[in-house]
Length: 328
Length: 252
Figure (cartoon, each protein chain N blue to C red):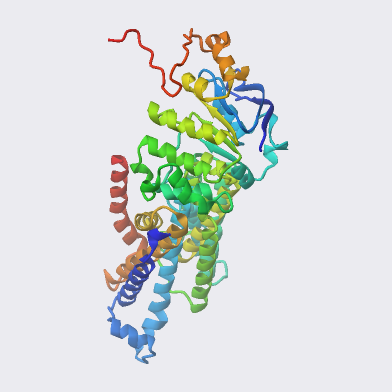
């Protein structure tokens, strides 16, 4: 672990800087001193708004980003491919169907519960469907193909639902806005639940670290080194699907973070997953914090969908990555 | 002391007219370097992968000290059988140390042997070097060290050093021969000269069947070798045991 010696402090400082930036950014910029006063209990309205609205939102943004970074690292490890991203196995399509139903069908549930619950269930169900279509996790190429096919079918179903369920009273723009990603300000209870889920996700993913390292040697060599590859892959995909489903339930479809964060983490701490997983999570958190801050601050009083910001920043990064890979 | 045995192994593919392995029975014990030889498509690598537990035969079984390999938990199989593949390219740019640590992670206490293993395979200076920056010989040594650091009682090697120059190949086979003094070592070889010189026992395979299984000298002298490979070999007596033979039509 000498590779990362001394780096946790720098990572924590960078994350803190992202957190402060996100807390300051908004329709109205706040200074660090305003933040300090607000946290100290300043009774001023703007200070109370900072604590009651912006703080839970940026904390949720950081946690969603951590999940995306974690999910990306897991799926890149499972597929042994740096171009793999967390939505590969249909979770995005499944979550979008769940969200479409939650947004367009009156279910008699609180909207945040319906949206979060159904998008989580959709993401999870889609991944299970991909596993069933691919007849398990043994053949990763088959899994990828199954993921593409299921995603295409789910996209068609979602489009049909959007056309069939929308009317004058429910705007399609609401659904579109969700698919572009965005962090809603959660209640403190909701934030607490998200924090617990993130801790669980991190703990579960760390149990995968050795297996993901071994998979990096190739499935044959991993098996020769004593890894029960089939059952491990199933377990890893289930953990990854859980991580992504929670992220989608809280943040909608936020692209590119799960692709980019593991790359930056790998450059920084190398490819061993015991360090890579938490660092990728931390970098994902930092990226979403900054992008969410920009989303709120760039076009006041409107808010740009978070997914547009991450795509605008991530697209060029992805192209550079492809170029480097083709050169290699 | 581990005895690896295969009984009437059959491996077939639905799209192939003949089985890849056709009722192959085989037994290997410690103390002798066993070479698997045969022409392309004879089934050598498939037999080795069956013995390593990486391919499940349609019929027949592999046993390790009398226990069916299929019944061994994966971690125990990984501890007891070392497998050196024909080709190896990790997905991530692991350092030499990382590859050895992953090899060591399969056996309790093996992590503490990593520095000694690095030293024994002349890798100490390359410890933190990424895989992409190693030469072919360095990669072969690093992978062998990663497999051997757990000290598996059985070692299976599929054409080790096939892509190496003659000097590195001789060095690698010498390491395997040393390991075979106390362990069970089976190695697939295309280089017949090295097979005859370095192995104690040779198993000649053709079309999925064992054609001849005997001491290396006996196999080398047998006409079956010529028949199986479809060529006529010239047998020469080695004067300098450590020097490879270079056959030429005319020396200028």
